[in-house]
Length: 196
Length: 196
Image (cartoon, rainbow over all chains, first blue to last red; front, side, top):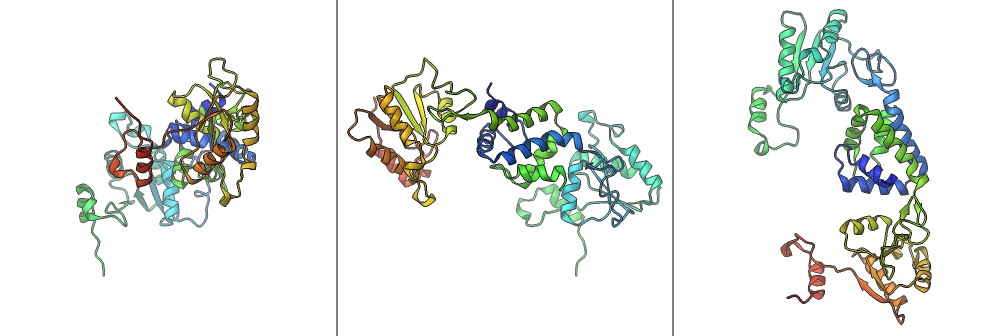
């Protein structure tokens, strides 16, 4: 196997890439600036060496604790619970949240053999005990597993003073009622808000 | 800029990738096996160091001349003219050609300031003089520039004993007459072959 064939083989394993797009990228790299390919190569190599989970929230970070946990301007009374570190990036780019995060590192999924003990609930309960958190926003995905995980958390926190909320589920902006699935539509109706 | 942001920025410059798919790949790499990321990183770095154009045909190769030029089983009397080294891969995977190649490294394109002198025509004419080539197949793309380049080559070789052919242009297999553009359809009719 030549280096070109091996690179195409490796690239085609990346999510969203097939053999054709991998081959297109490999030939693009052959003609790209050496400074670009060397930087790309170095970043891929150093990525796993330099980036570790934040020991407080589980966010991927080069500094531990991460820049969100140490930011004095963030609201330390609100905690957003997400499944994966990459969900933080999505929420941050919405500019709709100024609190802290807690990464579960997955969702409860009996079919995949993932129970609550495999996720970071113990760390979460420690944080709720030791930090001044007044509200948690459950932002797991609106899937069966995500909903199960949300429900588990609600039950575990029953009787505490902490306010528990769930991100709104409904029709996405720019969406069309005609093409919305019936479950989403039912959730959108149930979650209706007064306006005007 | 963190290493993760920089990697996403670099990845999003690759052909076919946007910011979202680049981010997806970066997070995938974070969770991938170290052996995989290290191999990928090394291949990207070494790609440009190890792969050079074959001095005979212009194919990308780790050994010079390339494995096609040195293969004793290839038919040395037929030369296929293509625009880019990656076209060789496409033709090779069709298993429809057993001759040799010549890479032009582009097409004649006055609008981009590319004239015949910027392509490898001189090397091609040298090969036609020194090698025992009886037929050349012009396999430039069926674009305005590709057709112009083919026409230029036909004119340059007028009066020589070499047979000049052009790959068939027509309806692709599995294509539909209804959706074929009129120029393709006209070429398909003009290039009709007797059957039966």
